[in-house]
Length: 68
Image 1 (cartoon, one colour):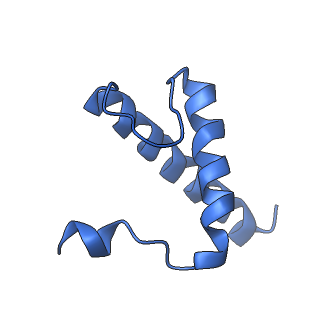
Image 2 (cartoon, one colour):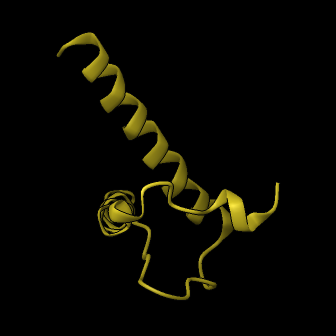
Image 3 (cartoon, one colour):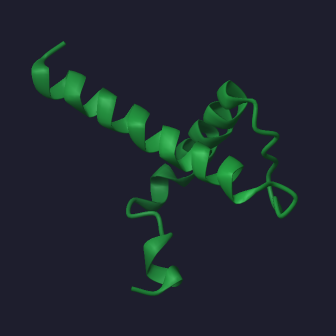
């Protein structure tokens, strides 16, 4: 799988919401993420944002599925 297909937004209308969510998560974790280039951040910092986003999305889906 190439990088061009892995990083696409499946629902284009959700791009703005996903960007906002990413910035909120980065702020929670204390990662100085900015719009645009973030080459000054470590792989660990960038990975922690993505990983925590996935964790929060799974938690939200589990709550929805359990009816809470």
